[in-house]
Amino acid sequence: MANPGRYGIERVAYWLMRITGLGLLAYFIGHVYETSSIMDGKEAWNSMLQLTQTTEGHIFLTLVIGMCVFHTANGIRVMLGHGGIGVGKPARPDYPYVPASQNKMHKLCIYASIGLAALAMMYGLSILFGE
Amino acid sequence: MSEATQIADEQSSSESISSSKTITLRIAKFNPEHDSESQFADFKVPYERWTTVLDAILDVKKHLDHSVAVRYSCRQASCGSCGMKINGRPRLACFTKISELDSDVVTVEPMNNFPIVRDLVVNFERLFSTHKKMQPFIIRDDSEVTPGTKEFLQTPEQHEEYIQFANCIKCGLCNSVCPTMATDSSFMGPQALTQAYRYVADNRDKGKDKRLKIIDDSHGIWRCHFAGSCSQVCPKGVDPAMGIQLLRGYLLGFRK
Amino acid sequence: MRESIVMKVHYGTALGSVVLVAVHILFRLTMDFNESLQYENVVANYQFIPYAILLELVLILLSVHGFNGLRVILLELKQGRSYEKAVTYGCIAAMAILIAYGSRTILMTSMGMT
Image 1 (spheres, helix red, strand yellow):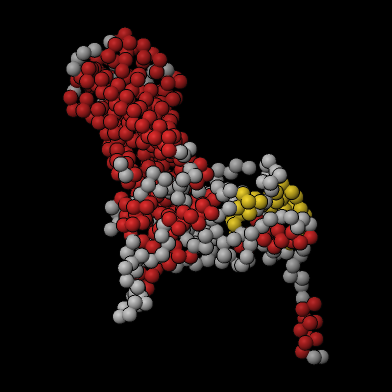
Image 2 (image 1 turned 180 degrees about the vertical axis):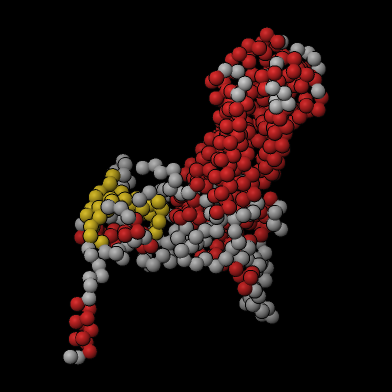
């Protein structure tokens, strides 16, 4: 039976990083394509806006904001970890062998990334739907 | 009353220190010679407070189904032979008590990411060959036994830098749980990469550049994404995730 | 190219993108959001040369970072000499095409050739 929490929040962050990365890449390709309609004049640009500045478009953009903020914040945490920062110091292990690299700081950063993403989504919703 | 009788009386009159209960042990059975897929076989096994999963499997082997294939040796978490998936998580069977699993059904399966030999026994060839690729020995031109040389000195602080990673018993639990190894058959794996760090961090070793070249590969250290599951399951506190990130620090220029 | 160089580029483009994308988004907040998306305002943004350079940099950095990430994910899914070559060159090609397409938009709009 699949249990996403079996190996801790770090494993969840690994999967979220991949999913948000692919999602952002797909959005980026679409964004480059949709903004190229500026070259076809005002009519083309406005018809593109009519397609994207809708309720569904705003909800989609809110999700993109969330993905972007999580990927950025967690990415910074991962980059620092990759450099050996915040992973603890080697020491003679003692039972019950709690791994120093799976420490509170990294867990906090992952939860903070998720929290920041949620806050950013709420701010995005206020901007997009607030007028 | 003699002393021996007195002790015997005390022991028999004391409260019972164990109560025998039973659990259902589900063992994954697979014989590649005539099975197309794995099947589970259920066995009712009695256990005490101190019974380990390995004890339960051997109990099944002794009384119920002698064909169960299981690899084990030391029974004290030193040899790394009895690694298997227990209730979905890779653990050492000799180091896992039935009582700590807190479940009426204990499911034992072979470790993930290893080819299955039979039932609970997996093939370790790839783990050993990748480990060998890391040149897991002290590399230097001189030696302690050459006439005229002395022992290579090491302070307690220098010893502390790598001793944790030397605790590896090659049980393979880390490789089993690694999300990259699940799909990347060319990835070196947390066990080998950690052993590379064990030698790089050892001040007696002079083969740092050689090892960094080996791991700087498209299926080497860069395919580790710090998911940390390897450290979560390591039974000896090696913390492979820490070793790998510290090793990566050398390639990124954070450490010299 | 050694994988360590590729990954250093991956980390570098990540950090660069964070800063530049933040500026790009903030540009949309310099006025009311809907007003900032009006045709004339968007064209004016493109014709402001520093902003056009920013857009070009964002395009290059994000394309490199995104497609390298995709390459890594695809390489971990399946292995084999020809598959790995196809994935690597395919990602490089996709990166180049996206950069070329986006650069065309930025260049022509900033030069007023809409």
